Length: 146
Length: 146
DNA sequence: CTAAGGTATGAAAATAATTATTAATTGAGA
DNA sequence: TCTCAATTAATAATTATTTTCATACCTTAG
Image (cartoon, rainbow over the protein chains, first blue to last red):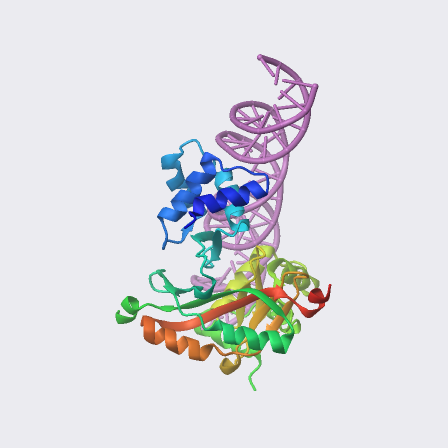
């Protein structure tokens, strides 16, 4: 099984770019925090522990790069900043997010029943769907009890 | 049938707030541009025609207010700014957006098959869903031909 | 070995959307 | 009419993000 880091290295090479220590450190933080949905600032703080000389601009640039390389996805939870999570290669098992309006917790939803809906839209609107983003807002079970 | 403007007036009064000329002008622009998805700057420019002395900050505040009052909804199309559209009272007929990656056109989708999905999620995750946002990215029929 | 030319970087400045502050104005109710 | 909270315009401040720029780092050609 190919490690994510090797995949990144290959994709960078294809593009004439290099896997630098800064890029390696940034990807490592994201890998080590699978399940979290860290924003840029949080990633920056964590990366600095391994790589204290890194600049914030480099983190921004690296995250952009990782998104282009299809290694992470950017999540927008309407909280004023971008968050990132590692992409699973498993295309059949996309997930979406439940955002609790009580405690801001983020829960990942593994169900994906959108295929059917997509087909219907593609037919009816003659629109070639490449990607979708779905968010659900509401109250988690903890907040519901209160 | 109650006019949207009257609804706004009532809801503002309940809260001890007033329907000012600036607020009236802002809501009017949004009503007159049903089907568009104007951003704050665009709304500001249009409102200024009726109400030249209005400040941009007031437009921001008014849009926030209109969202709180459940009169408009804020749409985030990942283009770096908030856009707004009037809310239809018709809760059974929500709509979502197709965003063309070729020409940035926005198409409204009338189909709403998410109820089923929501029920499933509510059961499985014990999460009380209040709202959802769905966006589809891809290519519209025009862009597909090219 | 050394120069050339590209990529990558940190620091700082620039930008864009939005929010806070403040002092003046407005308008509804006593 | 008078009073007082709500509202406003103008401006400053903030926040997230991007760009600029001079420098550092490689790799390859000479």
